[in-house]
Length: 109
Image 1 (cartoon, rainbow, N blue to C red):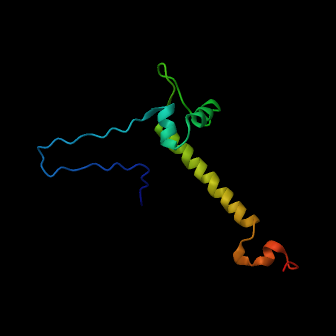
Image 2: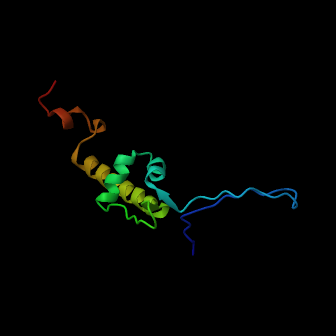
Image 3: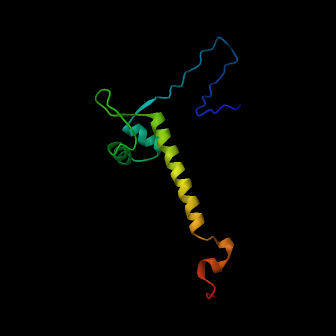
């Protein structure tokens, strides 16, 4: 039975056991600006997603934060929707591989 791994961390290993390694800390909670960079989006787009509750968020103090895993789930959902739409478009629209008759009809020359 194979196990499914969703998140993988790659850590450097020192040859000398006496050498201290710098820890790389990936924040779990992100502010709107950081979430926008993470998604390669604008802060306006992220704020809209938060306002419409497409992505869950909360305010632990003064600033609204988003869980990084919620951003990952959002991207997975969007990728699933995009794949489904691409499959539907493939079935509805004929491709050029099927010949020009499929696109233009038999009377087109």
